[in-house]
Image 1 (spheres, rainbow, N blue to C red):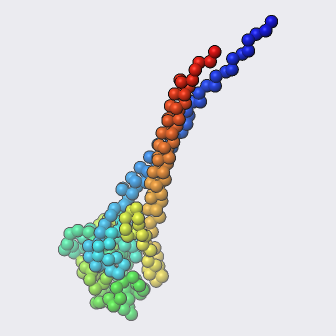
Image 2 (image 1 turned 90 degrees about the vertical axis):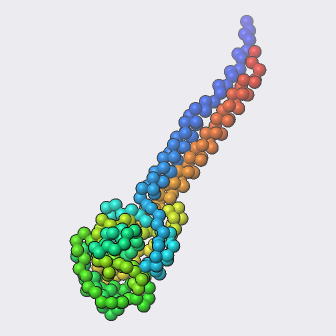
Image 3 (image 1 turned 45 degrees about the vertical axis):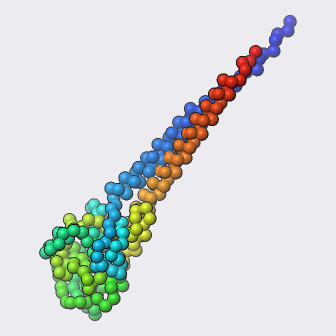
Length: 251
């Protein structure tokens, strides 16, 4: 007795659910990375445009700056910082200014030793200041606890601690870490003048900004890749279903 041949099995449509879930996961991962990087930039940094020539030649009037908010970071000699002008001991102005820290609590800042600023008796070679203004007048100041002594790099055109006294540490807004913008920053090189003179401590050096930019870039790339993959997967799955529906039934 003969039996009719077994009809060929119809292949089951491939399930695309797993690939859809993978693409959605990639999108979520990308969105999370981008939001993390952007949030850290917004919360940790701010933009500032310098309003005077007090920091020439290091910074010019009109330069756009990237400022990392100070938080609990320790301030050192050589740091470029933004300060609230009302934080001077003898405040006469309001607003924000950029200055360089030359003395920290307990230091004795004086001028001049061989035309150089001195800190705790050690002469400081400062290649970053405007030439010809190394020693405009003699002074000596002991920096009280909870304050810093600041000067502009343009010593001939800077209203700073030489005239207004020390600045309260609570008046420090942040560290100037770059010129430009948070997306296209040009990092500033920390000075070594105070360390070269044998004084402890090194200026603040930001190591986070560049990494956060890559978090944002990677997040955007992952999100676009996941979204593109999701669209392609859905379109292909819909095409397979249409072809399966249009195929004649097997007899």
